[in-house]
Image (cartoon, rainbow, N blue to C red; front, side, top):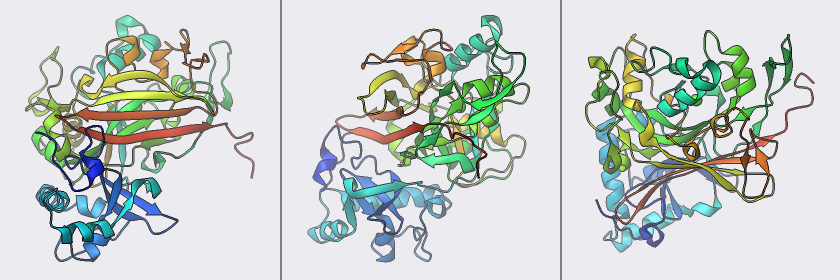
Length: 421
Ligand code: CA
């Protein structure tokens, strides 16, 4: 599919992340005003809440679904409404739209540079998986040795844990270095200290649009997914190493998870579908691939010490995953676990086969044994106070780009006394 041209000129630039082919959904405000649902096109944001109230573009003829600062009510309406809304939106923004429509929509838009972005949806529940083979092999090798790197179940089910919806924040939110109980190998007893091995995890987040109650097939799961965001699962490695056996990570992952502010819809990603990797063992029928289930999304991680330029420390691709979000969602439902509108599924850390493709500092610095040298000359094994970490992602189409925006966060020093009142 080629670039679809819009009367919003900036959207026709092959490098602009938000062409007519994309149209991601977010929530914005201007000048401390109300939070409103918005759609990115070129360098502008269309006020979807305003268009609905004015009767120019409605998802539901009988009820307002965009009069709240989140897209959940819209998502709940399901794939037919998502598709119809997108078609109408593309007509309104196409280069052959009438002058009258162009004037109307210009009235209901703001320059992106003037807007503040907020959480695009209310996170119902948050589950994080561990579905990147290179990441799991790297971490397993460090924690348990090369022979036991992949647990015996890993090639048969997408492993996950239930995270906290309350910890999910939008890109741009500062992240406070946590305190926690950790045990240094040099000491016999654990201590309560600020985390010394604070890390990122480069992931994609899939957002569940329509609910389920009972097991769903992989195809049904794919239909339920509304869209995708970049996701950074901030991780306290020293807390994790002490607490994770036998029930998995807990406080190590509960400080914060950042997401990019624009939900890129599954429809926009359709031209970029790719196959999952070859299977070592055939998956059981209910988890089998039913077509290309991953997406060709180029990903990168930037690290910038306070007041200094950023260094790109990793580049990889979402297609490196072993399991797709649809397979993860299908697996999640096998027990009968009800899935809800607004559920967020973290893909698991995305790492490629080689060192510069690793999606966490734990892997990039090999547990701190091989520190990175940034372009500024500074060395890093883990995050230091004041560092800004930014995830970036995009798909390269035929003369256009599908961008996700960025997922960024600056790490603040730990509190001097976390229990001070
Ligand atoms: Ca993770």
